[in-house]
Image (cartoon, rainbow, N blue to C red; front, side):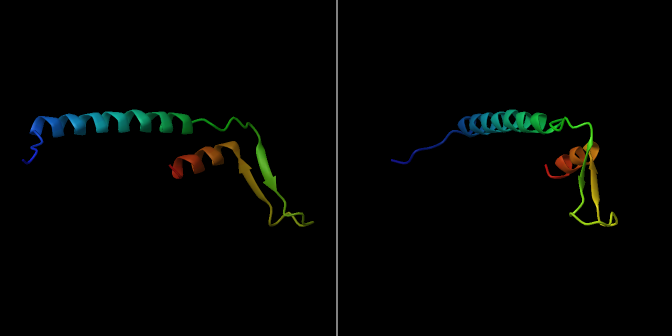
Length: 70
């Protein structure tokens, strides 16, 4: 005896799966936006006397990196 999966059952499962995926992704995306509350900057000096190789990150740079890595 073979089991038939009705077309409506497949459609219902698909809709439920898409709904759950959308809800979960909205929580993940919502938490990623604005998570860096820094108002200053981070300076990497490499512990050298010369400032030519220093790297300075502004708080906006971290927001840009977070959005690029989504």
